[in-house]
Image (cartoon, rainbow, N blue to C red; front, side):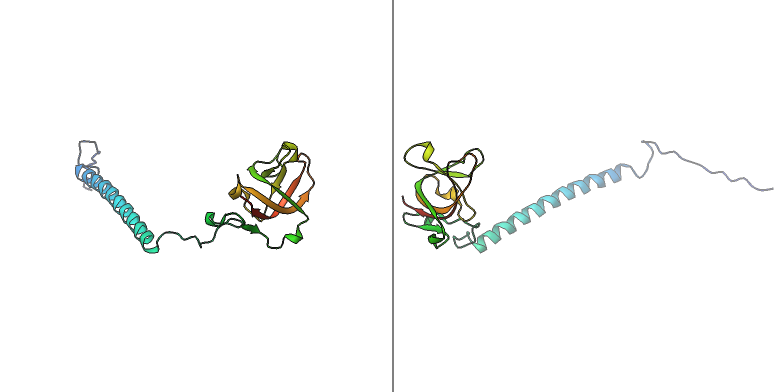
Length: 163
């Protein structure tokens, strides 16, 4: 006859020793603390490296590339001209104080001229960053475009600072 073998099956309960016992929990808590500490060490090293690189390379200089049509502030002074060199290619010119805002979606800026709102010239430009000259008296050269709302809509190709 065959002998019977007894097999004992233990069920794991919270009280029973298991892989989820206190030792593993302590290791798991230690791993979390180690991971958090590692994160802060990496963060500190990254910050330190960035600071050192900034100190070694120095501050940005004004000869770095500016966006197209943008000029450095120290170059904007009375008599300075910006945009295309040859103003003879432009048929139209106007003088006034440059202000922000077009009219009903036409133009990004406008020139205030003597005679009131009806004399405003509404401007747009793909050559000169007009926002740098807001509040200044300027002379602009460009090409007049047809418009629906603006009495005069000009694409500026050249600008001269008068004041």
